[in-house]
Length: 473
Image (tube, rainbow, N blue to C red):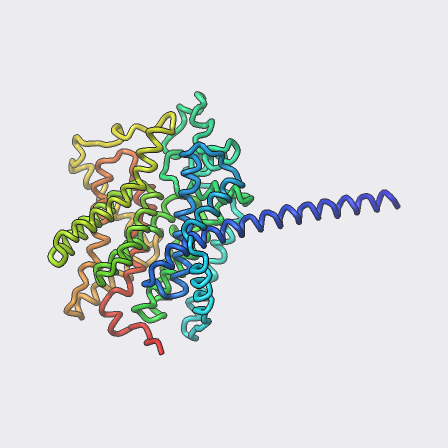
């Protein structure tokens, strides 16, 4: 009898320990999430142009993630130990610094709560239920499924796990002579994804990638709300559902890579750039600069697209703003360049013991032969127009553009020019950068095209006229 009682007691003790561990992990995760949100909210709340609750919350989360990742970078820069405690302290200091006026923060949070209204029309239910269904399984997989993509296993997540064990990003994997011959470019990818893995693995999550699910949900919430500003909710719901239904894109909402997060930041940065062109409101410009910098912090080649956007900014705004247009374009590009240099310049030069040689990766001679150019062109078009990979978002966008072209006097050339510009940038880079390829680099880069097309759906005049957003009472 005593033996049975002992077994029961032991079992209860194990259960109690498991519950205590789970409770502590949940509290830590909640604390980090709250601090990240407050950091982002402190920035977004300073921009009154963002006045819709879904956009405030989603942009606060995304901006908070970007800002929070910088805390880990600076812990490493100043040779401070990376641990759960130091991550928590660093994010607390960041949230306090951004919200240095506590009474204003409390007031802003109260107004955020007062803004909350649950209003949904019957015709929205079918789209929102379908979107919610897809998001639920995507989000659950980020928690339950291990990290599986090759680039993450041998790079992003490997560096993150080792950083937690040893307390530094520059860990033993970069010094071991038996590792060095096998290190490719994966451990050196632009740092946002790796830094987020450090934060969320340190929070006690088994695979760390739950943050990717939050990025997905935040983008979908933002996209739907943004589309509803100008287009009918049916159009918004259909566009977002069409985007999420793209098989390859949906898979990367729960597979850890740099490309999906990069596309989220990039497409939001571009839509605010377009809003700035339309309104001349510097708050839109600020948001565009922040999110484009975040995109460069996520994938290094984004600086090329930031340069292309800055050039368009000069060309489009110079007749109206003169040299102010040049100044704004310079600021826009400088912010993006700064975050590229933080990693690829400062960290590569002064912290990594060995790095890939960039000069050897750039090709100048014989790059534009007919054989190579035609092969790149065919490969890009194969992946870009593949229904098996991407569903019908691209074709829906092109159909809208053709309908707008035929039926409206304002031809909406800019809607088509943006994807064409980025296509051209990739076309050039695939000629000159040896490590960029069509099958992997460009294929996953199509995320950018799809998200941009989704967000620009409501910009077509034909939809704003015939399927406009309902007027607010």
